[in-house]
Image 1 (cartoon, rainbow over the protein chains, first blue to last red):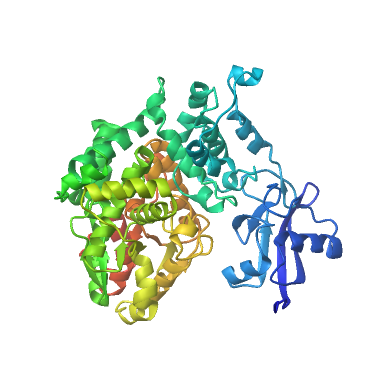
Image 2 (cartoon, one colour; image 1 turned 120 degrees about the horizontal axis):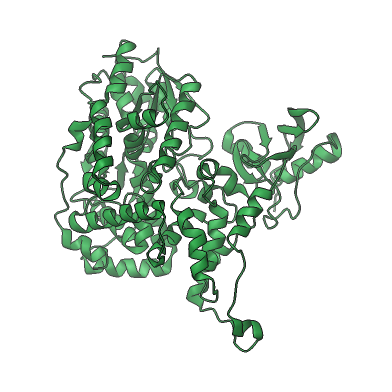
Length: 317
Length: 290
C-alpha cells in the first residue's frame, strides 16, 4: 500500500508565560507529515529547538486529558489533533498554540487545574453504594438500559477543555461548569448510588445557570455532551422540595413553553413571558420594546397549528 | 430555486422584521421560499429538557411536512430552530430507543418521516446555493462606509459535528455576506460567544451580562453595527437592547440587525420599509442610509 508521507514545513507560534518575563511569543519552524500530532510537534520543538518550552502531555491517545490547549483558537487535545488537519481546516501553514482560557497560566502551555478539580470534587465524583453492597452481602447490579444511559456521560477524562470554553463559568461563580455537571448527572442517574437527595441539592440550582451555547458539546474530545446532562438534570427539578430563584423561574418558563405548544402548537411569546416573569417585569420590558419601535410586532396574532390533535399525540398525550 | 421555509415562532412574533427582510431578499434573488404547511414550534431550545422524545417528534413533524411537499431542504432564519431540528434528526438516526418511540408517536399521528430532509440555515442557502456572486450582482447601494461586526452566536455553529456547514472556530459565512454588500466585516473577540438569550428563561441577570459582553466587544473592535443570524439573538440584542443598556448603564447603543436586513438595505430597500428598530434606524440615518 502506498503511503503518502510528504513533508510540509509549518510555523508554530506559541504563547508563552513565565513569572520572570510575563507573557511573550516564540516561533518555531519544522516539517510535519500527515501523521504528526501536535504533541509530537511540541516534543520535537522541545528536544530539537528549545528545551525551555513547557507543556503537559502523557498518553498521546486522548485518555489522560493532560494536553489541553488552544490550537488556532480552538480548545482541543494536542494529541488528538494532527498538524496537517489544522493547516487544512484553517487554510494556513501557521499554527498558533495557546494555553487554555480561564485557568491561571503557570508556565507556557501549562495551566493551574486546581479550579477544575475543586469543581469536580464538589459533585462527589464517585459511586456511593448501598451499605449491603459495601459489606458484601448484596450484589451491585446495573441493567443494560441504565448502563446505556450512563455510558456516554461517564467518559470524561478531566481535561478541562469544556470549562475553559464555557461563558457561564466565567460570569457566574455559582455555576459548577460543564464537566462537573456531566460527572454529577452520571451518578445522579445511577440506580446503584445512594446520594440522590444530596446530589439534587448540589446540582439543581447550578443546572439552571447554563446558557446552552453548546461550546462544551463542541470541544469535548470524548463526546460526553455535558450540556445534554445539564438538560437531563433540570428534568429532576420536580423532585426537589426546596427551590431557588433560578430553579423556580426556569421551571415556570419551560412549563409555560410546554403548555403553549400543547394548547396551540406554537410558542406564544407574550403568554410564556408573563407566566415566567410575572406582569410587572413584562410591562417594564414592553416599555423597552416600545422605546425601540418594536411594539407593533408584539401585537401580531400568531397563527396556531390547525392539526392540534397531531401535536398532542406527538407530545405523548 | 425552491426551498421550504420554516420561520419559527419568534420570526412570526417579536422578530417579525427578520421575516420581512428574509422574504424580500429571497424574492429579489429568485429564491422561492414556500412556508412549511401548518408548521409547529420546535421547542425553542427548551422542550428537550422537559421531554426529549416529544421534542424529537415535534421537529420531525415539520420535516415530514416538507417531505410531503416534495421539497429537499427546509431553510430557517433562526439558529435555535435550526439547532433544534438538526439535533432531533441526529438523535432519531443515532438512538435506537428514541427512534422506536418517536416512530410510534409519529404513526399514531398518521405522520411519517423518511429522513430525506433536514433543516438548513438561510445563511447556508444564501452562501452556498444562491452564491455570493449573485448576491453581489444585486447590490444597488454598496455600503462601503460601514464597518459591520459579524456575530455568529452559538447554535448555527455548534456542535460542529451536527451543524456541519462551517468550522465553529473559523466561520466565514457572515463575513462573506457582509463583504458582498460592500461593507467591511469586523471580526471581534466575542463573535462566536453566546448572546445569553437561553439564560433569560432562568437567570436573566446572567443572560443580560452575556449580551452586554458581545455588544461591548463589537464596539471595542470599532464596529458601526452588528449583524447576527438568529431570531432569538434578535430578541435579546435588538428588540430589548435598551434593557441591556439600562442594566449596565452604558450610555451607548450598538445597532444589531439580522443578516438579511443588511442585504436588503444594500439591495436598495429602505430601512424604514424593513421595520428596523429605532436604534438601527438612527445609526443608519447618521451614515446617510435612509
